[in-house]
Amino acid sequence: MEANFSISLNRSDEMLHESTGYTIVQIVSLVIQGIAFVLGILGNGLVIWVAGFRMARTVTTLCYLNLALADFSFLATLPFLMVSSIMKEQWPFGWFLCKLIYIVVDINLFGSVFLIAFIALDRCICVLHPVWAQNHRTVTLATKLIIVPWILALVFTLQNFIFLTTVSDNSGNVYCTFNFAPWADTPEKLLKVIITVLTSRGVIRFVIGFTMPMSIIAICYGLIAVKLSKKGMINSSRPLRVLTAVVVSFFVCWFPFQLVALLHTVWLREISLGNKYKVLAILLNLVRPLAFFNSCLNPMLYVFIGQDFRKILIHSLPASLERAMTEDSAPASDTTTKSASPHAAAELQAM
Image (tube, rainbow, N blue to C red; front, side, top):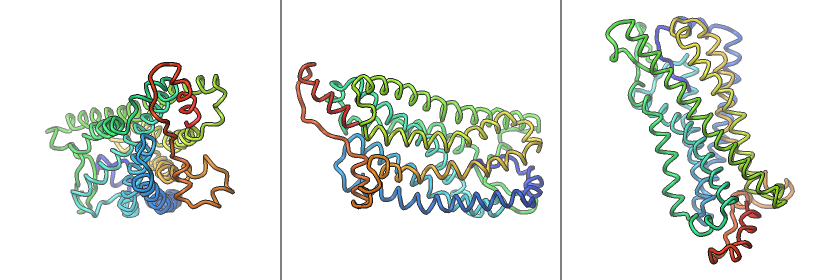
C-alpha cells in the first residue's frame, strides 16, 4: 500500500528480494492477501446486496452499506497490488491505474475509519438524545451527512493526485511512485520537498486518519456504556455488539500498519538515504496482510455477533445479515418527555 518514493532505492530493493527470509514473509503475505480478497469480495458483495436491495433503507443499513462499499472497493485493488509485489514493486498497469489504484486505497483507508466514527456518533446520539433522534434522525439526513466522510477522505488523498505517477529507472523498469523531481531543481531542494510532503502525509494518516477518529469512537463508547449501564441494558444491545466487534477488529488490524507508517515518517531521512529501508520493507510485509484482512472480517461479524451458531446454521446467510443490521423503527410520537420515554427505551433496546 505504501508507494515507493525514490527509485534510487532499487538496488537495496533488489538485494532485499534476494533474501530467503524476506521471500518467505512475502509468500505468506501474498497467501493471506489472496484469502482476504476472495472472502472479502464475496462477503462484502453479499452485504451490499442484502443492505442495498433486500432490506428497508434505514440509517443503520445505510451506514453499514457504505462501510461494505468501502471494504469492497478496497479489496478490489488487491490483485493489482499483489502482482506489483510479485514483480518486486514494478508496475505493469500504466499511469492511469497507478493513480487510480492508490487513490482508491487511500480514500478507503480514510473512509473506513471515518465511517466507523460516523456510526459510533450515530449510536451515541440515539442513546443520549432519543427524543431528538426520534424526530430528526432520518434516512434523508443521514444520506446527506454520510457524504462528509467520503469528502474528507478525498481531500486527504490529494497528495496522490498531485505527486503519484509512473517512473522508469535506468534499466527500463516502471514503478508506481511519488515523483517530486518536477518540484525541485537541485538535489537539496528535492530532499526538502520529499521530507516535507511525506512527513505531512505520515502525520495526516496517523493523526487525522487514525488517532482522531479512534478517539471520537472511544469517547462515544464511554458515553454509551455509562448510559446503558444505568439502564441495565449494556449486555442486551445487539447492534452495539456488532459495532463493538467492528471497531475492535479495525483497531487490531490497522494499528500495526499505522505504526509502521509512523515509523516511515520518523525514519524518513534515513530511508531516503537507503538506511533502514530493509527493516521497513519487512515490517510492511508483516503488517500489510493484517490490514487487508480487516476488510473481509466485517461481513462475518455482522452474521455471527448477534446470534449463536445454532440459529445461524438454521437460517440463511442473507437472513442472518438482515438480523445483524436491522434497527427497530418505532412510530412517531410527541416530543414531550412523557410520550418519548417508551420510545427512548425502545431505542436503547434496539441498539
